Length: 176
Image (cartoon, rainbow, N blue to C red; front, side):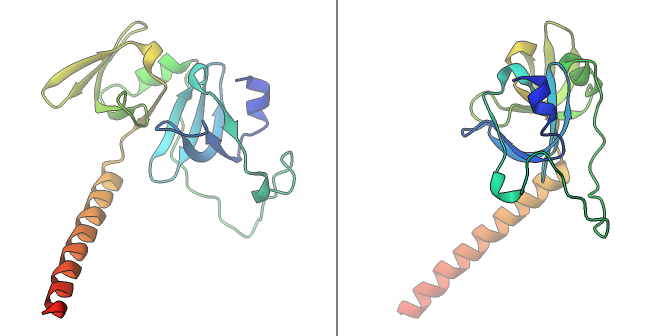
């Protein structure tokens, strides 16, 4: 993707990639030479390597003019997590060392673990009892894992499953 074009979209809600496991919707925060930073609700900042981005879309129905951002001074600024300002993508990854991260958003290449070592040719994660090594070229994007959000989603899923189970039992009783 062209850096100058992406810079025009800073501050706007964008969809990175059109579909599939890597596609996400969020606010474009930063554009650098080889990566961008997108804030995604419930995930936080996701650092995308630009060489792996196939498309960036803006929903023009949500803004009147794509070149003008209207700021309402009465609304508070949203609180966004701090952005790692690395000179390149691998510098950003190095800043995440010893933290719980997710590499790639979905599909078979998604991996979560503790980032234990980063060099220009190899990224090492501890995933459970395994040591996993990934070549940086294959990293499409990376973000910190928000464990509180993940636990909340799991709790919501368990509550929903419990409610569905109760509903099924109640409907069986009604039939009798």
